[in-house]
Image (cartoon, rainbow, N blue to C red; front, top):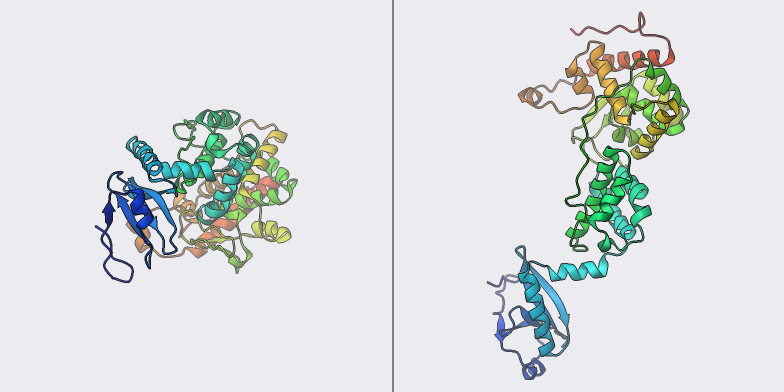
Length: 397
């Protein structure tokens, strides 16, 4: 049933007739555009504009949505033949309009990836920088100049097979799939070549730095400039690498780093992973790292590359990732006797349960003591001072 107009007036009844060349010549423009439907060719409609311009369109439904396929100005017999071909395509489950748009607007993969980054990823994806890095490193050298719609499942498998690390391969696949998925929603492509490409099976990581490894990595961090300082700050605070990279001076007040739960596009802050506002006490060793470099602006993807370089130079085969530094900090919290509850609280894990609803106490003093003790302990081990007799785990209560 035709819907009412925006001004509330009832719609004009649909005009249906058996079109002919004579009727096409006699049809007069009106004050507004109107349609004349051809009863001989279902879905074929003549659209007549107030200017007198007229063109054929084919109207069909795809996944419950009306689709208007522009045919153009041509003879009625030709328009009916095109409409018949389009009806057959729709009956076969195809979306002719999306296929046409894909043929016209996909461009190269590099162009598509750039459009996705600017129009969608930067606005909606907190980890867009890392995904963009993976695309530029692993996909653009292979696919950058290819027509996006020509990329096949075999191309995806070939690109992923060239990536040694299974986790990185999975992340690269996810980044590519996000681009193709967005293109389908924009009706630029009709197929996601990443679909049905198997992910690598990976185990949950348990890696933490040992006491003997801490001095090695601490010294190596000192040789890596800005990225090394960022890695030190992750180790000293236990916060997520992406959030440390996005740290803003505006969020540091009276020794506390306040992480807003929601994104702030103006500042370039992505928001916390769980969308909950979080406060982190910055112990003196962390402030010492911050002081010379002010606020970090490094990309999280470069941190992984830096860690791989360090592991290679140190001859460590059991690789360490930036997130393992966060896990190391959490392990020290429990190792010094503060308990898993304190670790979850400081690392902004969502505990859930009714207790988290009613317990709104901030634990500021407790968190401050934990952060100072853990950071001092880490620095003592890293610099060879030793923790015995110098750092004592504080008993709660």
